[in-house]
Image (spheres, one colour):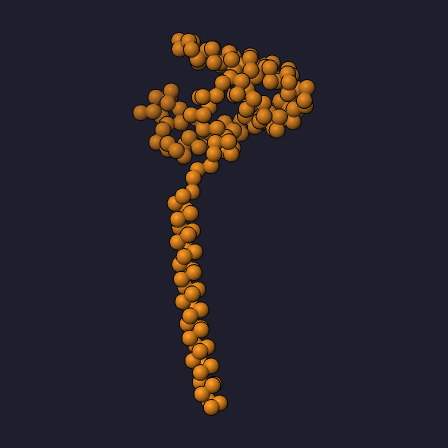
Length: 169
């Protein structure tokens, strides 16, 4: 009688192990299927959570929106005070409106935008301390280099300077 009980226990325990293994296998497959379907349903992050605006979003921005975007960067990178922020905001809005107005006239568009940019920069330099201006200029230079590197990565066949005919042809 005792052997029969022992044999029954062994058989029962092996059946439980097999049952547990099957259960784990099925549960694992269901979990994998759930993760796979969750990946298919994933959506892109909302534009509000993006760190920077896409080119299409930048085109839709008003001059005030662009000025506020630059002001936020300047506040962080150059550590503007509250008083400076108010003054810089007005300068940036004026500069962006002048650049926007220059876009409408295609004949002198580039020159007018550059002159509006340089006039705005002169006003900004007067509104900021020399240390703040140095920090801001360093950030702009670094950002410009990053954009140039990114452009090279996306289009490596493009010449560095298309105005130079030797490089272009």
